[in-house]
Image (tube, rainbow, N blue to C red; front, side, top):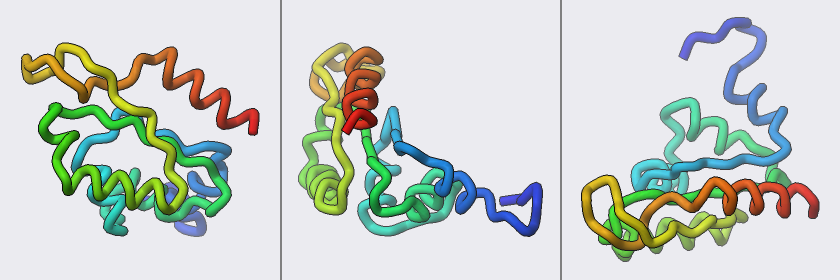
Length: 120
């Protein structure tokens, strides 16, 4: 990661400015990284640098079988235990051509959840 100003570290500065943290879409890879404390890219390092009180929302999007996988569910539960709120995926035609649960929640649902969270 190249820093524009060496006196400021990008992921720390971004995290300090956050009123809310939203990952949409959240892949199985990203969810796994966050649940296991892996911070090896800008997204995951910002997530690790957030203040505890910053609301964190995650909107999974993936194949139904990936979403239902026990490891994925364990990772989601781990994130919930540390304060993440899940915006659950919807049932729809998925990118892989299957129909099932795993499609990104609607934009309206995501925006509604963000607004409701910021009002708290």
